[in-house]
Image (tube, rainbow, N blue to C red):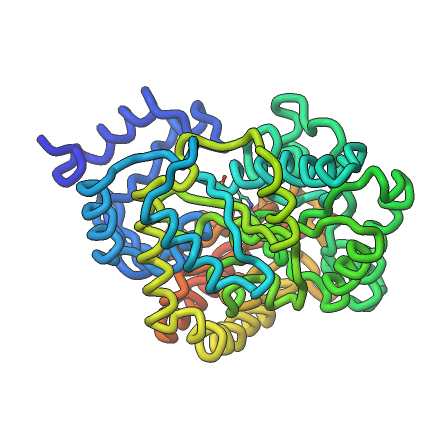
Length: 464
Ligand code: PMP
C-alpha cells in the first residue's frame, strides 16, 4: 500500500506517529495522549486533514508558503532538476546552473547594494553563517576583537546552537546552556506590552537607544553587529514604532556596526514589499533569507551580503559551508517560486490591494471585547487578548492560557491561527483572496466569542 496517497486510518497513523516520530517544540508524552493532527493535502490556502476536514491556513504553514499550496510548476521544476542533476556541491571551485541562476535572480530582486548570496538550507543555518561571517569580516579588516553581536529579547533567529543564542527565547536558552559567549540581548520594541504611558514614537526611540547604551558599555571596538527581524514574527508579530528602525540604523552607522536584517519571515513579499527592510526604510549590510524563498516547497536559506561585506569575504578563504549549500533541486524550486511571485505580480498585489483590505478587516477585530490591539503589516498580523482591553492589561492566569484556548477554538472553527503567549498571530499565503480574508476574519471572530465565553465560565477574565 502507498502510505502517502492511500493512508491508514487516522488513529493508526497517530499511534505510529507517537511511537516513532519526535516533534519539534512538543512534549511527545502530551501529544501521544491526544494524537497529532494529520495533514494530508493542501491547495491554495486550504489544508485537508486525514479525516477530510478542511481548514483555512492563516499561518502559511510556518510563515512560509507565500505562493500558496499546490503549484505544479514547483513540483515540475524539482522533478526536472532531480532527473538532470539531483545533487552536486559548490565546494572545491565547482558550481551548477541552478545556483548560478538563483544567485542572479536574488541580486536582481534585492536592494541595489546587495548582489551576493551564501546559501544554506534553513534560516537557522544561515544565521549560524552570519555569526561566523561577521566575526571573520572584522578579523579580516584587522579588528579581531570586534566579536559581540547585539540582538533582542524575545527575538527568533532559529534553533541551532548559534541561531538560538541570537534568539531571545528564554526557554530555548534553558535547553543546552545558551547563549554562546559574546551575544548581548536588549529589549524588544513591544509598545503594547511595555510602552506604559509613553507615545509609541518615544518608546521606539527609547528601545533603539538601548543599542547605543550597549555599544557604549562594551566599546564599539568590541561590537561586530546588530541583528533584528524587521517585524518580529515568532515573538508575536511585534510591529515596531516607526521611529525604531531609522534610529537603529543611525546608531549602527555611527559606531561602525554591521546591521543584519533577519528577513526569514519578512522577505519575499510578507510585508507588502519584497523585503521587510524596504518597508522599514533601512539598508542592511546582511539579510538572512529562507522560508518564502522557496515558499517552503524545498528547504533553502541563505545570507545576502552587501557589496562591501562580500568584497572582504571574497578576499578571504572563509572556512564555512554546508553539504547542501546551493542544493540544485532546492535552487531550482526557489527560482521557479520567485519567477511566479514576480511574474504574477503577487508581491505587488499584496502591497496595493490585499494588504490594505486585510488591514481594514483585521483591525475591526479590535472591537471585540477580548481584544486589546489588532495590528497588521502587509500580511502578517496579530491580536493581543486582554481581560481589560482599555488598559492593555495582561491576564492573571499563566501567560498563554487564553491563547491556547483561542487556538483550539480556531482549529475547531476551520482556521489555523497560532498563539504566542496571549497574542494570536496570522501570516496567510500571499495569494489569499479578499473573500478568503473575509472568511478568515469571520472565523477569528467566532473563535474569539467562544474563547471569551470559556474564559468567563472558567473565571479567567481577571487582569493580572
Ligand atoms: N529567523 C526567523 C526570523 C524565523 O522566523 C525563523 C523560523 N521561524 C528562523 C530564522 C529559523 O529558520 P529555520 O526554522 O528555517 O531554521
